[in-house]
Length: 392
Ligand SMILES: Cc1ncc(COP(=O)(O)O)c(C=O)c1O
Image (cartoon, rainbow, N blue to C red; front, side, top):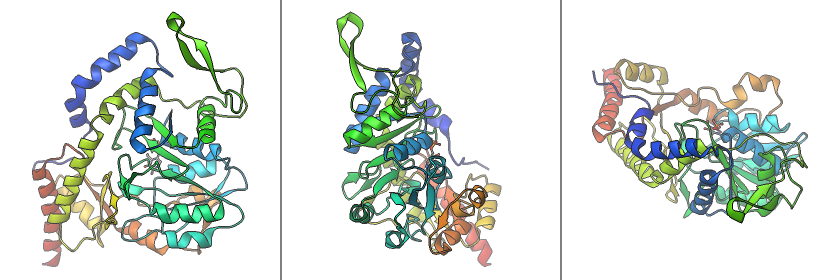
């Protein structure tokens, strides 16, 4: 049996090894490990790519969310409207700044927060809406931005899984007040360790994000001082020993940044391969599974390919027995996590039937740029065979 892994980090490393290794050695030799030129270049390139004014590298995607919430001055006593169908970090970030996540149900077609339910969940405590572009699809940003504008709320996009995904001609993560990304190794743009980034076009928010990632250092509106660098050249410096907020130590180090610069140059090529794989799955898979239905005005980056099956356990077991890696994101929606039986949260409407249904049925098939067409066909044929055998 030829096995197909759920994900293969090794294949990507082997294909980029010759590009990655010289940069890593250069960083080691330079001894400039934090706040160096690679991080700055990555921030500039990603801001430009997303159509945003600023990008602020940080330690990981969870920190990007925490920094964004703090920059928007979300804290104790505030509520943040979000989706329960996401990785735990989304609501964990809200809780960790002392605010209360308010879970709103999702749409069955594309698994995104249902914008038609958001308005009724708003109270005088609501400070922000935090949509998640889960699996690299797109939340309905026009609807969400419209509601936020009407009610004076911030929008923080959790775009951890959506680097390179599009919505009505724009890049996700660059639409809300702040967009948050994760560079966890398996993400569409993933490093060789942890990393994250928050992007914004608001100067004041950018200033706070930069301060918060370094212990709240500087003074409001005057954080960057010029100093004389090597050869008398003027360079930017931070007054590290003056602090105006309680912040964090959350920076993107130079080793990660140099790896990410190499991978960023391949992002479009990798995402278009993911799109081809998704199209091939859609063409080959039986009608007995429900495929994700993304809006025509969106351009998903297919971080995951998730189908719904009424016999999730049976299908997963069959795939694994046939040597095919699979997963079930997310088996426990956040309002049902044990942590939120203790930590305060609010379930809009008292129950969330759509997300409960999706969690019970979601099966993630292998998707990564190095997967071949033959492997995609083999996965699809195995899924189809499961249904044929079941029907007999
Ligand atoms: C939707 C979502 N939000 C937030 C995060 C947190 O990112 P990180 O693992 O880099 O902290 C992740 C990734 O793991 C994620 O998938």
